[in-house]
Image 1 (tube, helix red, strand yellow):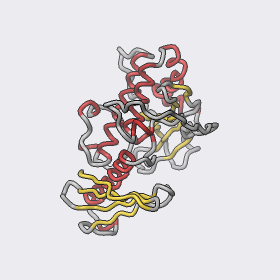
Image 2 (cartoon, rainbow, N blue to C red):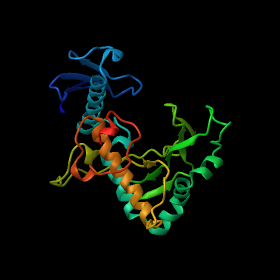
Image 3 (cartoon, one colour):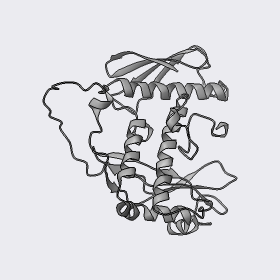
Image 4 (spheres, one colour):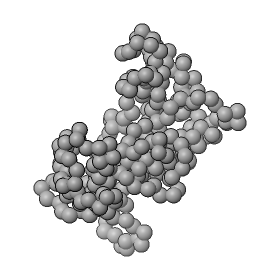
Length: 283
């Protein structure tokens, strides 16, 4: 989609987006209050969500996602979370790639065993028939485990608990248990203080490179349990590759979520985001 930042005034970033049908949209993002819903103006589709077709509703959601991505990329404001930012997800991939094998093993062994033995995980987290919100046998749909990286793209903390999504085949709603991943506890204010540039590097991109990573960043692998562990699967080496594949696929789905074709290096097979503004069956 073609996008253009048309102005910034009083804490509002205005973004014009042209959708795949050639229709123009104006999205205004309040960067001073994240609880304020984005203003979305257009004259091509119904203004009531229930009166739009599924394809029209998907386009509207993709336009909003595309506008927020462009505003984050082209302004000084931090608008999208790290899990939906390809730059931060790439940093997470680098951190996993460079993590010593023994450290990776110690940090992610529990996660690996939770994924290969979901029945034990269900028992440990109390996800059992008679103790959940619905009748019948619950099944784990997704297991999430976050880790934190520093400005040098090094893993400095792997969060101790996991966050688990569970449901049942004949119901649409998904339930959760465990502790959501969060790297924000105990954070310290950092005040950059630097001399002027002697020379701006040729490959320096503003504002991404100027913004940098600003302290601790949360990266969150999210995958369903193994149906069957391949016979030639070697832990921990192959599990590291498995988590990296998930982060690459999350980058892929960030682009699909805003109606864009992912760059070739990210357009691979694998499990990425559990939900998004795209038809998963199409891919």
